[in-house]
Length: 159
Image 1 (cartoon, rainbow, N blue to C red):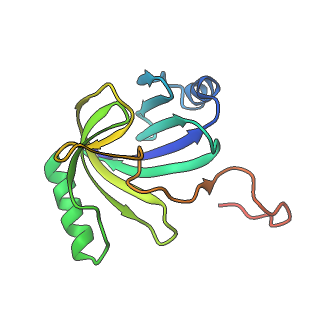
Image 2: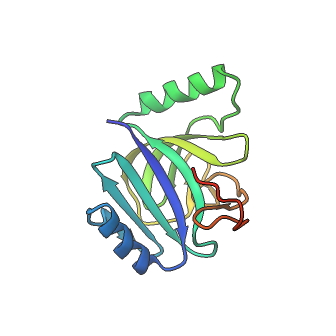
């Protein structure tokens, strides 16, 4: 089963874990310093919380799949459709070993297609083939995407 991933920056991890546990009626799946994730069955969602500056902003989006073959197929499809990807890398990031590829939407929001292949004991992103360290989780920093309160209170917009 594939599921969408939503990674949020949070300013207070304890408060966020408490809130999202109640919101989705689901216990935290993995908890590490500055990091937590939930494997939510209904709706199918991988919710990732990353503690730090920029609370209330989007960190990145993703699609978690079951096999590396599915990651490779997604990368081929995206490339064939003319989208620039990072290629496929085996990485260690967010306390997990993963096979992944990344692409950004027109506004710069980073998306990853990935399969978790194991657990790890570090948050920092490392591309395993060359030992290169990068910002976790997205391959390149992007401007924060605000969620919640609208920047213009008079806009009245929703969804």
